[in-house]
Length: 284
Ligand code: PMP
Image 1 (cartoon, protein in one colour):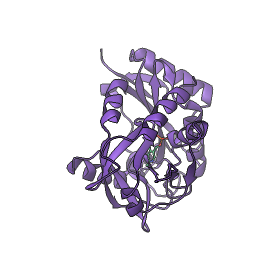
Image 2 (cartoon, rainbow, N blue to C red; image 1 turned 90 degrees about the horizontal axis):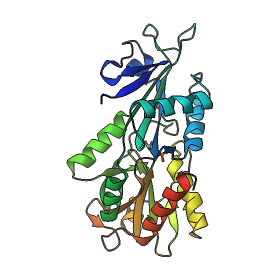
Image 3 (cartoon, rainbow, N blue to C red; image 1 turned 45 degrees about the horizontal axis):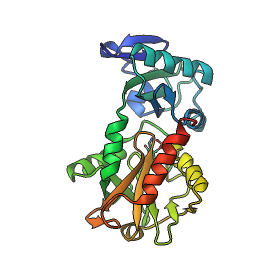
């Protein structure tokens, strides 16, 4: 069966799904996006993803192309047309198509909204989590507003490529001596007394929706969470490390650069949190 995409009001075969060459997302990265996971027809953490989409649009003074209910209806229809129950849904909104000039189009432009869905394999993710992943570290060379989920992802692309070339799954980004987050996930460590530590929200990390739900899960599990900066050295000496994102849930980290974390196996806290997250995010 061939894939179907949503482009500005129409469902189109994925192969012919196009936007104009003067789309400002294409020319200026003037657009925002969201990624969410659907398992067994239920969108994980949809509330959070929708709220963050609204926030990203507001921060860039872009109009919302549609309200929540129609957006959810488009997602449902996209999944139906692609015959998917477990899926990764990608939503992108750009400022629209206009002659190439840096300022916002003086007469406004219709936002361009694109949505795609592809199969998501939970068992593959669980198998990866059972082994844990390696990460490397690199300087965080991104701009000062990475709290906005824009499609301007070149530094993230370079950081992820470096990870792939090093045989790792992710890259810890280091700014002013502290680990901010990873190229497409939030970074966490667990200290010797079992306290979970993750960088505070602000302009230097993307406020992950999974991070938010994981904090709530940790509290329910009576685990202490500190939202504070930590150094790469602290991370390497941690008893556990893990990362969170919509597509990796809670993913244990077993090595940072060439330092083994704990005993080199996924830690018990990450495993408990992963389970708790999967239950909470689908509304169970
Ligand atoms: N940080 C960055 C840079 C990301 O791209 C992502 C994934 N979108 C995250 C963190 C995690 O966010 P979420 O939990 O909402 O997927």
